[in-house]
Image 1 (tube, rainbow, N blue to C red):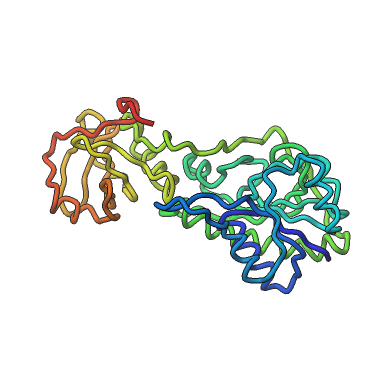
Image 2 (image 1 turned 30 degrees about the horizontal axis):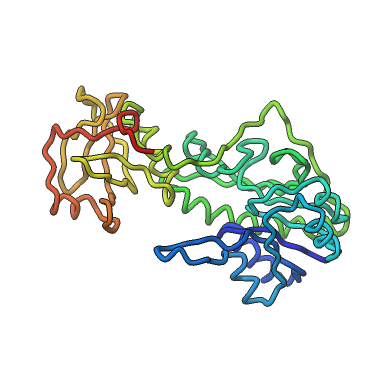
Length: 318
C-alpha cells in the first residue's frame, strides 16, 4: 500500500509515529510550511516534519493544494491512499480523486458531533461525558464524509484539552490501524453521517479565554480545562492579568457579586460566580511568571476578601 501522510501538529505526529511503528511505509509527508516560533521568531518545522526528517521520508510543504502544479505533484507520487490528520489545508476535489482508496481523515470526535477545527475544546466546553475518534472518508464538505470506524472514549472530570488531546491521538492511531487492512481488502463499509445530529466546533479564538464571572461555576471550570494548554483562561486582578490553569467548583453558596474574592488562603482563591456558587482557583500564572500553586501566589501577593476580579465583558482587551 502506497501511503502519503498529511498532517502538521503533535496530534498528527503521534499518529504518523504509530503508522511507522506498525511497519507501514510512508512514501511522502505533506505538512504546513515552517512557521516563526519562540522569542527569536525563528522558522520552526512542524512536529510531523521533524519525524519525516528523522525517518528520511520525502517532505512537501505547499502553501495551498488548489493550484494544478501542487495537484500534479501529488498525483505523480501515485498514492493508494492519503491519510490526513490535522493537516490545516483544504483538500480540493482534484486531490480527493487521486488515491484509489481515497483520502482518509482521523478526526477527534464522534462524528457527526463536533465537526470542525476544535472538537476537543468544544466538547469540554459543552460538558460532554464522552468523546472519541472517527476515521472518515473525506469528501468536499467540512468533516461530512462517510464514517469508516469510530472508537469512543470517556471524558474524565479532570480531563483538560491537553490530556484529552494525547489520549485521542493515540486512540486515533489505533482506529486507523484497524481500518487500513480492511481498506486494502475492500471489506470495510462507509456509513453516511446523520446530518440531523451534526454540530460544529469552530476554531478557538484567544479572546474567548477571558473569564466572564457572571457565568456559572460549572461552566467556568469547563472553560479552564478546555483552554489548557491554550489559550489559557484568564482574568484581571489588581490591574494584572492572571491566567488560571486549574480550578474546582465548590458547593458553598454566596450572595457576593460575581468576580468577588470570598476567601484567599493556602487551599485556594474562592471567587463568586453567576450562579451563586464559588469557584476555587488552584493553579495560577501571573504575567511573566511560571505556573504556581495558589499558596505560592498568595505568599508574594496577599489578597483581601472583597477584591473584585475583572470579567471578560468588562475588559477592553482581546
